[in-house]
Length: 204
Image 1 (cartoon, one colour):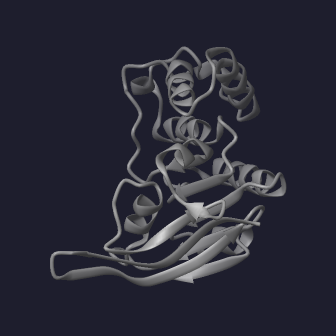
Image 2: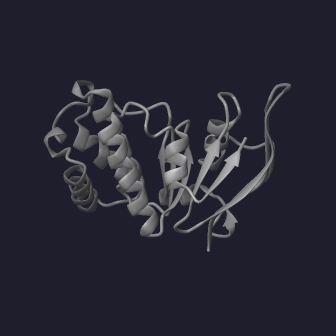
């Protein structure tokens, strides 16, 4: 079953064309890597899928219907430019973002604590984000992207800031999510990660 269908998406900023007639399909349990040089339109495409930007033409379908705002509750997004509130504690931050995705407070706390334990981050729960290293912040942001069990997980340069061990951990978690039926859309410069994780590639 198609979780995501992108149909003939085009986008320009002024006279500069960023995306031209881009189409692809992503099914449950599949992963697609979006490849391209800087400025090729990878982040623009991900922002269109997340309704942060509107396309000039074309459409995005989610579960066989045009993507609408409530569908975003079933999408997890890890942006390239991290968006954590530096003064909030890490656990509080994840629970707040989970509740924005429609989770109850109790479910958000339980799921967040499970993910913190799973990624070896339990000791960071009450630590302000500003006191976390870049790699620690990246783990917290990843947890925020998956805590609500999304059907579609969008990852923009997810390995940035990770050492080799944590990058391997992230690969294992992405493969586990795929095996559970999550559709994964990955933008990365890490060609080895794309090869290891993804069923297909889209070159922009």
